[in-house]
Amino acid sequence: MNIVALYGSPRKKGNSAVLADRFLEKAGEMGAESRRFFLNAMTFKGCQACMGCKTRKDHCIVKDDLSDVLEVVRDSDVLVLATPVYFGEISAQMKAFIDRTFSYLVPDFITNPEPSRLKPGKRLVFIQAQAQPDPNLYGDIYPKYERFLKPMGFRKNILIRACGVDEAGEAAGNPALMAEADAAAVAVMNG
Image 1 (cartoon, one colour):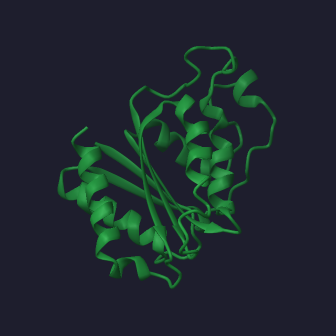
Image 2 (cartoon, rainbow, N blue to C red):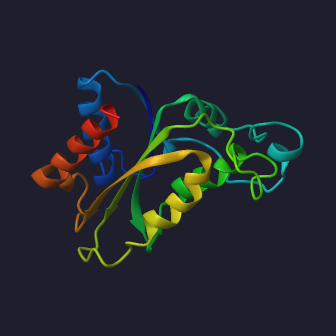
C-alpha cells in the first residue's frame, strides 16, 4: 500500500500533523509505505485556469514544487489530506493543492461517466483539526471537498475530525483521537 500525506498546516507539529503522523505510523506498522509533503515548505501556485491540462496535456502544466507532488498522488493508493481549520475553511495551502487536482479530470468530465484520469479505487483520509470545540461548526468542510474528490476516484473515504484542539500538538494527548487515527489506518489497510 502506497500512501501519500499532504500536510496543509504551517505548523509541522500542529494537531492535523500529529493525527496524520499517527495514522502513517500505524499504517507503516501494517506494511504501508508512505511519503509526506509539507505544503507550507513548498513554493507553488494554485490553479491558473489555463486549461492546459484539458487542451494540451493529461496533467497540470504549471511547473513548480507541486508538479512532482501531483504525480506522486496520481500513483498512490491512499491520499491523506491533513489540514487545520482557518476562518471556517481548510488552510490556503491545502486549498491551492485541491484546486490543482482539477488536472486529474478528463476534458469532458462534466458529461463523462468516467471523469477521472486517476486509477479507480483510491482511498482518501481527510484530517480536519479545529480549535472550535463545537462539532456543529465547520462540519460542512469535509462533505464539500469529498463532493469534489469523489469524481476523481476517491470513493472509500474516512474523516478524522478533531474539535477543540488549539495548542500545537494538543491532539497527541487525546487518547480518543489517537485511537481514531489508529482505527482509520487499520480500516485503510484492511480494505
